[in-house]
Image 1 (spheres, each protein chain N blue to C red):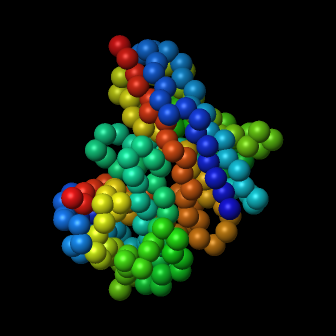
Image 2 (cartoon, rainbow over the protein chains, first blue to last red):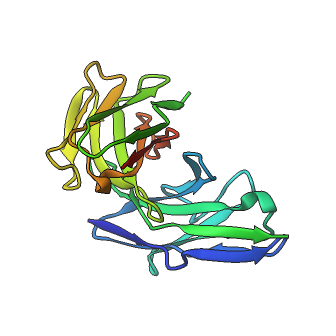
Length: 114
Length: 113
């Protein structure tokens, strides 16, 4: 079984400042890792994913996440945030089993202030 | 195209009534998943289908819940004798065959009064 911990329920940050959203997971098997973003009154959108290969993965809008197997972490970072990045961010994991169901963390609300 | 539509977007019902939600993937995908998201929490897995076969059900899916995918395309989720604790966002997602990520619909927000 897998579990995901997002310790920060809310992260307030000023516009153009850097941000890190933390995600730790536990699993007895190898996993694939994802970050999803949810804007108000919208569904979940895939932000980025780690499947294999380079441990640093990037999204098209400037976010990046680094897979750290020894620390079982997949933290999300952005060097300079915009007001439009205000949203709920969910870290998710799926084990390499047959169902590929997603196990989500409880989410981190990123609040970008001007 | 990995688009998914869900209907209705919002549903308000009285305790004890039955409700049914529908999920329509734009294109065919073998795998279809249902999740439930309560306020302030991440989505929780409910069940999934491989084509028309329902292969796994979470313990969250009590006997008041039933899901179908009769032709391997759209899916329905029915809740019988709704309770206030069923109030949540119900999300549908598809997993394209050769990938591991899932793509979500906008969800159906259920409010039980």
